[in-house]
Image (cartoon, rainbow, N blue to C red):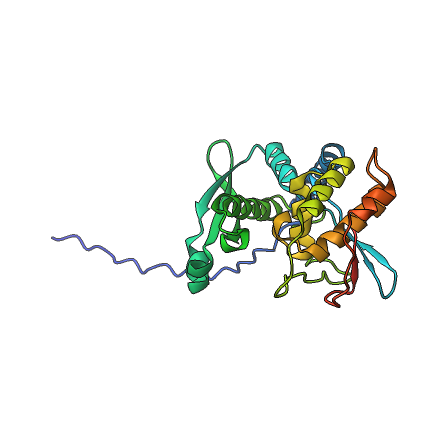
Length: 279
């Protein structure tokens, strides 16, 4: 006699409610305590180890209409980003950002756009965060090496700010400021003359006197005025920058203020901007 096997009906599972944000008060309290301790450690690290004009820069702007002075949130610079990576034992690696290049289309081809993805990795190679950055070779007068460095730096900055949640301390640009004037757009107008050799030399002398690195100053130019590199500063912009730096840091040592002032070309007001440049 053959054995009769009873057929089992499939079990019907009751639908469960999935609420990603539903956590117990105990678990939420544990997370709160952990985040609070992490933020305190980060605050201590930034306060004790990050140096102004080296790891970050502060940018101020005075309105010629109201006379009010506004100061930005500290802008993270490359040395500061590297210190934060050291704190978390992370290393940065770079890959070509094919998605951005594809999206840019003809512009990428015409301008020689370089785009990279920066991936932050732990010691065992695990990727914990990434950021994107780009720069065109055309904007650097055909200098591929400089354009590459700027694109990689922008990608690393983006990765650090996204991954390490340090936006409360630093910003990569001034677009997220809640108050203060919008940054002026200092795009070079047709026929504008670039800064002269004496202006360039004087700028570097003032920066050395003020203990400001070339990299920090160029980050300031890029962030505040959309100028990529000192070599792309116009004659008029250089004059205003020199004047602002001289007012803040005083005359150069070993030279009279009047002598230094004579080296600064006369400013011709073209009406292109309404803000007084301050560093």
